[in-house]
Figure 1 (cartoon, rainbow, N blue to C red):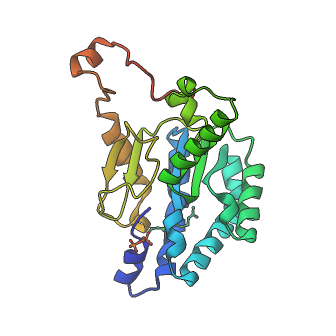
Figure 2 (cartoon, rainbow, N blue to C red):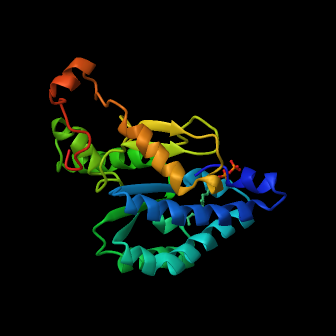
Length: 241
Ligand code: FPP
């Protein structure tokens, strides 16, 4: 969700006003995704690197999360949306953490869509922590190195309950992943949009999904194999993989 700061600057506003407008775009995007049948939506709301931003901006983002958790919880529950977090929730200020934990509990029964907020999240960090956890278990004799395959490894990550990424959308005009879901996006379709996040409208999501639906996903196979319906060696879309 890149471009909040630039959106604000272009209008002579403070960066935090761009984030506030960004939060409104979040609400619309979440509702649209649930309405069109997206089962998993993951939003990069705050990266580990974002802690380096000016204190006032970090505090404003934390307040927006609290507002979102409090104001949207009834709507999220009524839409059948379950909220989940990846990243280091324990690093957030106590008030924000409690609001998010409350939101997770309040929406726990949602079955239509899982909305995952990436908070104090870093893709590399998640990979490294999984490796460390496995190393600790291997040293204790609880895991054999030959048991460690991709699915085994994924079960150690904070994304363990999520399927692989199908479609990754980045606004703001940059064509990079910035440490988002590095492991999980191995076969994702990447869409980079020139618009700033506050300008992301329900129709923007629909257009991106439409673009995605026209892609041939080969997962390493040839186009002919895909047309013949030959199975891939693994199913990257299966959360149990
Ligand atoms: C990146 O834009 C955006 C962020 C670091 C924060 C994203 C937060 C929100 C959209 C609002 C709060 C979230 C929720 C889930 C309620 P940037 O600030 O780097 O923009 P710039 O590149 O134009 O400066």
